[in-house]
Length: 118
Image (tube, rainbow, N blue to C red):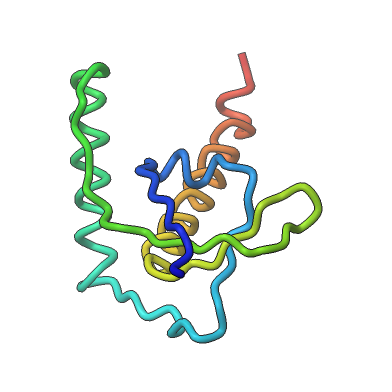
């Protein structure tokens, strides 16, 4: 008897907002994305979408990220669900790095003396 499979369509925001731990299994390849082949096209898409949204905040423009496959662990870490990333590790890692970098830049800008002086 096959185990049941549950599929859900989620945005990257939903994936990163869920209280969960995403685990990269040891059998996954190491991070191999490079600037020209993967980073530059992704960054171009992000810039394009940001510019569209700045011009029209109600735009429904989206970016197709591709499928991300995760498999829930039988156990949990405390009250937090843990899942193995089966497919999409490179994309999720890249988005996490981009979000961390953006948060750092925004935090620096927010605490900059030129913004806090009145």
